[in-house]
Length: 434
Ligand code: NAP
Image 1 (cartoon, rainbow, N blue to C red):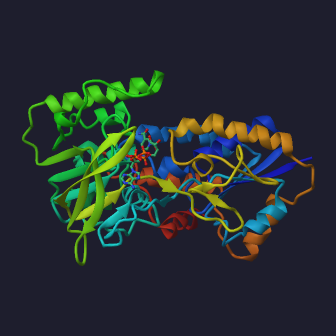
Image 2 (image 1 turned 180 degrees about the vertical axis):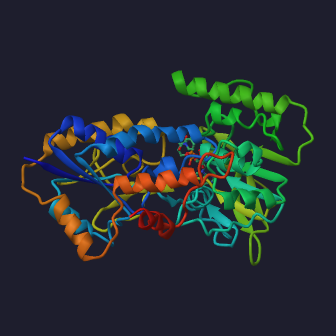
Image 3 (image 1 turned 90 degrees about the horizontal axis):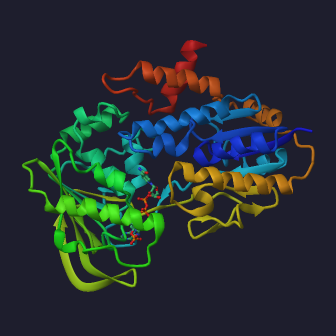
């Protein structure tokens, strides 16, 4: 008997789950749903455009989507085009792989001022996400403040710092590149409420700030400890030590005469975003780290800037009928409810790299295999009929490949690809080839 399984979300966690299902439950028929036409989630819209090679991981997922047992349903929004109840009615199991695509909030005054952007929106903007392509961020002042000292904060600063020449192997959207080129940037600030040892970034990404054409990374040696103290062990300790060595190297270098500086400011907790009609600056409070926690010192300072990007983590968007718990979907080892499962960032929170999702999704698939009930469900044909009745243009994987080929064909040399950023332009490709 065919087992019908729906996966909501075609990012890495969902597609690792699809791949595992094909092996563990070979009689599955799997339908993967995605709100916008393109698959690959975080690989397309989260990974920094200048980390273009990381996007090659999508090739392994393309093989999964090409399998005859897998159906791709791009441009189908679960919750409006098809309801969650309809999925439950038609599938033996549902895997929620919806990620964490909402920005966490700082909860400080001024956060709603024009010129404050969450990393989801800002990264989505330079990556050509249809929802954020019209963000038009206020990059008209010399200063930009980025809150957070993880890899996302580094991505944002690095993408802003790079020249067109440095974006040669990047698939940044042309409109974003033009906007960055025009921006009178001089000061990129990265503010961490804790210290360099607690920072979330990793050595490879930190090392990329060393040799930027027009930007010098500035680190205050007075903020760096001699050695990595604390309860770190093994791989984690190795990462901290490498980070510290790179930061020391950056702090010890002679300051180069470049137009932009990227300032690493540790022990700085945001208190208020300043401005009347838009962002004009940010007020922060100095902290000290005691037992791993940022403790305020009462000493405040202000920094002028025209935009603030918060890169402080993400939470999962609410889904009707599913309970959220601290920014993730409430679950026990991936089980949400009878026949409903969750994988990826929606299961465990926004941490880890793309491959982290592999073993995590496989574990959940093993759990599904152990709990599956052999009820007859209509699956794909029922959903196709509903979509047809509702006049929803589903994008299958072949459609997507045509759109994708066109993105390569319209690349602006020397960059490899120019993305479509509006759904209607993606659909127009299919009308032309029909
Ligand atoms: P992250 O590493 O957890 O960094 C979040 C930062 O926000 C931390 O510095 C955190 O400080 C800070 N923060 C949180 N709440 C705050 C608040 N209220 N006020 C001030 N600061 C606050 O997460 P991320 O950068 O969003 O990245 C998410 C995951 O994706 C990570 O696992 C990351 O490594 C991964 N990623 C990887 C790559 C890559 O491999 N190239 C690229 C991008 C992202 P505290 O530590 O003090 O909470």
